[in-house]
Length: 108
Ligand SMILES: [Zn+2]
Ligand SMILES: [Zn+2]
Image (tube, rainbow, N blue to C red; front, side):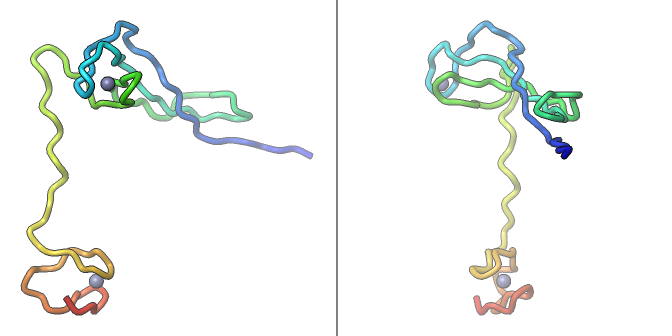
């Protein structure tokens, strides 16, 4: 029997071993890391299929966001929140004046 086990495995790469200040807990425990995704066969990473974004990972808090270098980078804006309301049934966004959801017919 031959089992072909292939999959995608994340691999964490430490870009900068020097600890930095964690913006969440304020301790000097955050390191700049990058999580790359590798295609692996038999759990052996063969090649990189996705290069991760550098991010700060705190020993205590976990991932605490993208690298904030000198000059700083603005925090990514919140995903756009529509002005409409959400249908309680299907969570589709509907205009506030709608009385019925156009997607599932739920009375609003
Ligand atoms: Zn922290
Ligand atoms: Zn709906």
